[in-house]
Length: 317
Image (cartoon, rainbow, N blue to C red; front, side, top):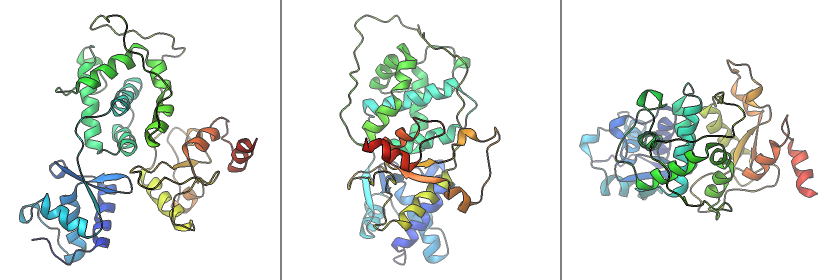
């Protein structure tokens, strides 16, 4: 039985534990997700951890059932429970192939950070993103030792089509990431028409041309903890408790599952030393500013990035 002493605040503490500590493989959700602030969590595992804050002991999975019992309890506390989605959309498949491409360019980067980046964007778990990227690997005709990640079979047919389209012109497909990201976040109709193949493509042949630099791209590690604390901080100082663009005032529309406001680094992390930088939380927060995707893109049209005042002046012209 689920202890009735578990309250909403206990579940929120459990969600914070999951954010920082992750989900054990055996506790991944199977049929449902708990949706909170645009991110997905396993309902039954969240209740197990919540019991620790309500009773002093974690609730073993064997003493209560998932599904109707766990979900009904969480809904009663005001949480949103939704069935897991199965097939991925075209754009979700694109982001999986894009992530595989990132690993192919720089296999040494922190894979977990990349999985979380894609998971947070599309509203799926980091584990499902990892598995999907392994599916992408199964379409790569190169020998296994040349692939950046192990492959997993049983891949979605649409994923193979997207991979073939992406790999035919990797530089162009790669350049569409920012546009597709914004379209996905705002549920916008794409302005880029993806043409189907008009001629047969020979199997096991990969064509890549036009790149001026074949050196791997370096990805800087971002602090997930800073992003979480940053969102909490800026919601706390906002007059409506929302994450709001400081340049134009935009907030994520009601009903949208994914938070679309970015936390922009006013001192870019690409200017850090190769080993990165270490800051106290207060100092790190002082270097962040919330921006909508459009204002964030405008900020990075300059190096160093444009200030909030400069972005406002640019948009006013």
